[in-house]
Each structure stands twice: as structure tokens, then as C-alpha cells.
Image (cartoon, rainbow, N blue to C red):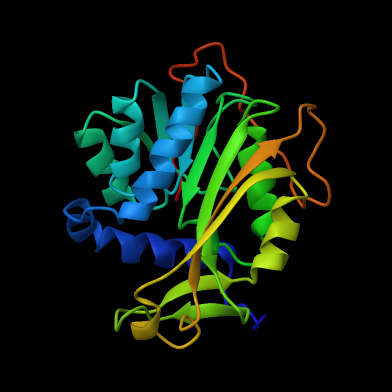
Length: 251
């Protein structure tokens, strides 16, 4: 992995600014067909298990959120980009501005988790803590679906995609990504397929492919192994609405 310049907060601000500028385009763009297949399969799994709530990390303009809500699930989402959260709310969705490292929800508030194309923006040094915080907000034994890009060669840092402005990515091999997430649960599904746009991607992204995994969290409340995580404070409240706890605004 390359050296990561700047702080995590600085990288999050840059990503929020980038996605704020893209919200109109992304709101009007249909999701890729394979992505919707995986989402519908996960929604069917939740229905079969009798699970009614789902938390999405990196919700964007709410395409998946609207689909989960239409399937009868109580959905909540977080995103770094205020414009994406505003667009979700304009669709009647429960969305909040927050980073994955400081989720504004009580322990075990959701029965399932969903995160697509988000954790690949989290630096290698921070990804265990991010996963531990996500696990904290889910029930023990919950299924967690994670979509990311895999690569034959690992790389980390700002990378342009299809000629666009550079964004921070942390690309990992399938073997190492699987080893990382298995510190937090057991892998029940592992699906990969080629990225048809990989040939036109920027340097560092030429050999990428899609990976969607479904992780089954442990059924005990013990912390995830090897997770570098410090608990956030002020999560307990007697006035919980739709799993959301009032916190100071994220800067």
C-alpha cells in the first residue's frame, strides 16, 4: 500500500465535496443491473429471516434505500455528502450525514447492514475500525452485505476514474479483503464479476472487478477481533426515533 497523505477527516471532507458535486448526475443515473440483482437477493434474504430494519452506509442519493423501503423494510442511511442526504430526504427517506467511524445509532439498532462502493474509500489503516463501528450498530448474528472493488494489485491514494477528478481509493486483493472482513464475522456469500469500465479507468484501477460479500456477524456482543476501535459516546437516549440518536452535527 502507498503512503496515505492527510488525515482521515481531510479525506472524508474531500470525498464529501466530490460527491456533493455529483449528486444530480447520480440521482438521475440508473444502477447497474448486477447491483440491483444483488440488492433484490439481499432483500429476499432479509424477508426470509424475518428482518425488518436495514442500515446503509454510503447511501448516496437513495436508489437502494428507495428499493429497500418499497420492499417493506424500515431503512436508514448515512452518507458523508450533505447533498446526497438532502436528496434522500426529499424522497421521504431517513438519511443522516455521518461517517462510518461515528454512526449516530444505538448498539444493535438494526437487523441488517448494506454498504456498496463505500468501504473502498476507507484507508487500510482505518478499515478495521470502520467495520467494528458498523458491526456495533447491527444486531448480533445480523447479515451484512458489502460491495467493493477488488484488484489484482493493491494500491491506495487519490485516483481518477474515467477522466474525472481524483478520489481516494484503497484497493485490496480478494484474498486480503476476505481476511479483513472475516475478523468481524463469517462469509456466507462471495460473488465477483468483471467491471466493464475497467479498461477506461485511471491508473491503479485498470484491473478492478466487483466483489459483493454477505458477512454473518457473530452472535455474541464481544468486540470484533483485531478491530482498532474506540466507542463513541452519547449514544444512549430515552428518545430514540427510527433508531436515530441526536448528536452534534458532523463537521
